Image (cartoon, rainbow, N blue to C red; front, top):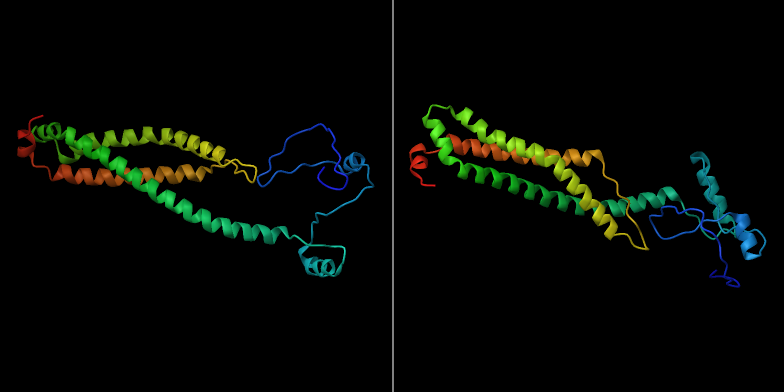
Length: 220
């Protein structure tokens, strides 16, 4: 014990609780008094206050000499969420921006590579009488299937990465719980689908403007 006579005691831990800020230990008041060999005492109180009488209560507590300070949980949470919300909002916005750019680049690059590899085949199908829309469905269908398959894989990898980052931030000062909202998966899917749609539209435009003579003359 780091106060008064500083006794050393050995006690049994009943259970472990999750504390996200700091490290605290909880014990029954009677057991604490017996452990310290002191009379029962209290250094603080947690109060549930009716909002209609809160001002009167704070006024009386302020006038009470034995009360050293008053901690209002609602105000502290509001201040904490405002400060953390601004910082986290900026960080999350930057992460989402970079993630969106990477997703768009990967999907578009994959579509361009597929078009470059199959340009001769697509040109041959056009010469054989296939319509532009039918030829586009072949390439865009493959892109859609790959996108659908990649979504659940990306969700699993994203959750694993989030768990790894949470574990790295686990310190004695604070801990961050791993909470992934279902909406996060939805936003990620929307970004990838939007990127795939944009890439598909660009590829379809390239197929429509393809020079069949030049494509067919190109050697593989």
